[in-house]
Image (cartoon, rainbow, N blue to C red; front, side, top):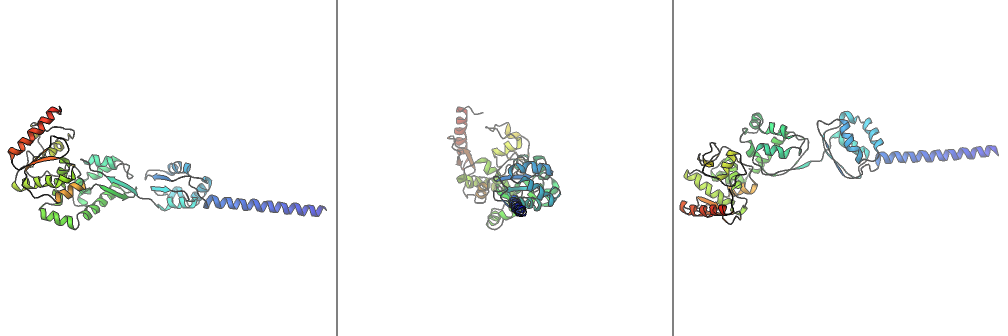
Length: 341
């Protein structure tokens, strides 16, 4: 009897041990192969980040943390992780997460560049959209060497940037960003646009500069080509452009509501009341609608335009100075009535 009992006990122990082993094996498989992500999470790993910063940010969003640590140690992740923007999604297991970080399998970020007026503004808008701060970006965007590398100078490099949404890796460096924008710029100017530009007699820089004035004069897409046509007429006749937005840019006072006679004397190569022709570079980053409007400028005989006293964003156009003076007086009277100084 005792031998039978012993055999039963041994069988029971064996079965229990086997069951426990199987359970442990299953648990191990689940820990390494099962879903390890609590919810979708964007992880930004800076070039300046250490492994502790990475795990502090990531682990709260993971299950099976012990398995993560074990597998990360096995793959020497602390010494080999790559900076970047990663998206961890439900369904990913520990092995996939660790390998993603080790191999640098980034998810691109969408970076939207909107029209701005100056390089510092552009640097500020881009800061954090890639792994660079505004100081680092501005240093590159105003660098003579960087500009020369892509065929510009530090003053005209601004004309290379086009407002749009781009897919970039978060680890894109400022220099790589400039190179990417140069490729986008060359692509933009290929084909039909460059043929239109050639017919206008303007260089690419001149188109961008004129488009920047048009964009600052009006946000109404339907009259951009007409405004561009006024300035083309003045350029061809050798008349100064007398564009009020260039005064604001020259003075770096973009809040001016009224341009007065004293402002027209402000000494600057951007003052188109004092200097004929286009200013040295764009006075803002124009929207693509203004660039297209400039390339498709209207052929007419208008030489002047003035904002409407209705303040609807549109303008009254004139062929003669006398007609323009009447329009200007009506607009000034409305400014006075509204007490706008």
